[in-house]
Amino acid sequence: MKNTKRAFTALLFSLLSFSAMAGEGFFSPGQISLPFSVSSVRPAALLVEELKSGKQSHIGNAFFVSEGGYVLTNFHIARSCLAVHRRMIEQKYGTLTNLFRKGFLAETMDGISCPNLVMKNNRGESLAVTLVAFPPIAEQPEVDTPQEQDGPTYDFAILKVALPEGARPEAWLQITAGVKEAYNEGSDVYFVGYPASTIRAENSKLIQEGKYSDVATGDYRISLGKVLPVLSDYFYQPNKDVFLYTSTDGGPGSSGSALLSGSGELIALILGSGNANSTFARGCSMRVKYCEGGVSLYLKSSHIADVLFKNYPDLARILVRP
Image 1 (cartoon, rainbow, N blue to C red):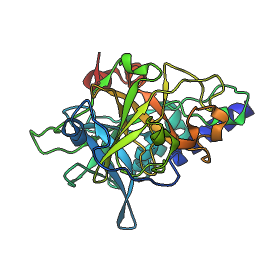
Image 2 (cartoon, one colour; image 1 turned 60 degrees about the horizontal axis):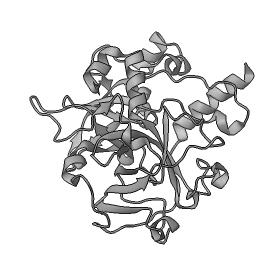
Image 3 (cartoon, rainbow, N blue to C red; image 1 turned 180 degrees about the vertical axis):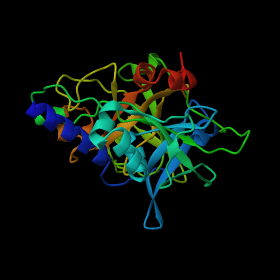
């Protein structure tokens, strides 16, 4: 029981602090030839800022997942919204721990207000946002090593952006029940989101070997990478139905970004990035082939769909394509 409590505590801590921390690199526009157009995916991306002491600071990404203005991001990005609803949480759930274990679904599909969060679209316009749902955060099972206790099971949340009446996003990335072809080891995959900075330096071994390159447009970045194998001693439980490792790295502030297939279809939501020196990656002990250049862990779109159907079927029917 103590181990279970420690695991759950570690999980909650990881959701609060899970982010990419490392050096930055810069990549010139046009380094890669994209199989989809930038204009078809960039309007779906949103930059998330948090209001603190009257100032706005970039904390991550989100992206539209429906024409109705619903948005997908990491739970640890959306979590600060709960700070302004303390009374509701105490009355309905008692404690934050109970809320995390039960999950959250707003009483209406319009969500609850998030006055401390702002979303900016590709034109730089600030959009108000509400929190609609996040799934139960399951306790980790008994595990053999402290490293395994830190792995988040579900780190995603559904928000909604206030759109003008009759308006809809210029683009959105559909959550699907399964995108199978892009899960194969060695398949090309594409990080899309903010910011343009990355963990890798320009002289990274990955770039030298032609394994990785970026196209940057202002602060927005699309990065080509490969699906990596999941090995038995990986830092996160090697569940191929849930997680996806890739050679796309994130960089500071890349939480909430999307991973796309070559057809521009949503594959997964980023969970975190790291390099050989970061806490996330635990160095090369993961046996990632190119861990010195950065690696990212993602939560599969198909698994997000499964979790939504299991916990919030009415919401899933709005957001998920079979």
